[in-house]
Length: 161
Image 1 (cartoon, one colour):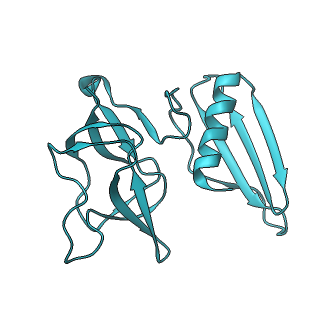
Image 2: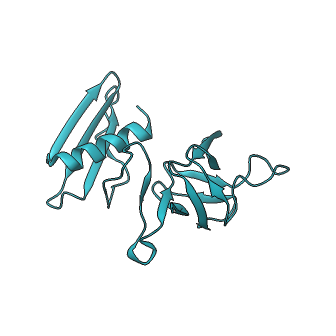
């Protein structure tokens, strides 16, 4: 199960109003608990094969409905309400270009389409291309090249109009 599937599951549970969901598959066990506020959820993920107690993943402080449930895209804060924030789906190192001698994936002011590669995030020697889930214009790049990023950290502001 990858991070996008887990994110989709969290969003589904938050929308359903369920207070707790447990999922056990071959070698993983996931527990999702929502608090009294239906917009918050905590995820616990632990391998079943080990004797380690459940390990808490990074708690999701905000789970907002989006038009495409598979997208790590949420509306930006109120001051940027017309922009869509593209967030990091994983922890790693943010790169704006595929290699040092290649051009940047995107620049501020550039028009992008759904599916365009925006950046690469390196995690454990794997280079993950982060694609846009929306079309629009890049308004702001929120992270410096070669910087570490956290899960759910805002990376780009996109103007969908």
